[in-house]
Length: 136
Image (cartoon, rainbow, N blue to C red; front, top):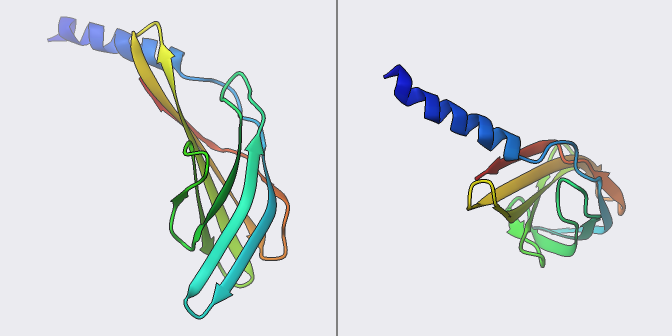
């Protein structure tokens, strides 16, 4: 049994070395708008990030209804806005992309996610991704 675990252990070490290391770029949010009515709240904003060694760049428009997660115009980006204690709102964004990993002859999927709290008067702010993971 111990011998059969060695290949699994070595595969796990190889997989972790294939994951992107380091920090992502700061994501820039502009034109953040939040409009509420008795039926609920709608949000819209632009978000962008330059490409880095760790992740491809993006520049897209997001809109949806709180608190649902919604795919943005660039389908690699998902966003949600949720109410907190008035007047705060939590803006969450996830970036997902796929890369061919030649070491494994397989496609890997990577995710980065981050969130920040804002008020409805903040039209420009940044989100610093703080969650990073991948599967090959």
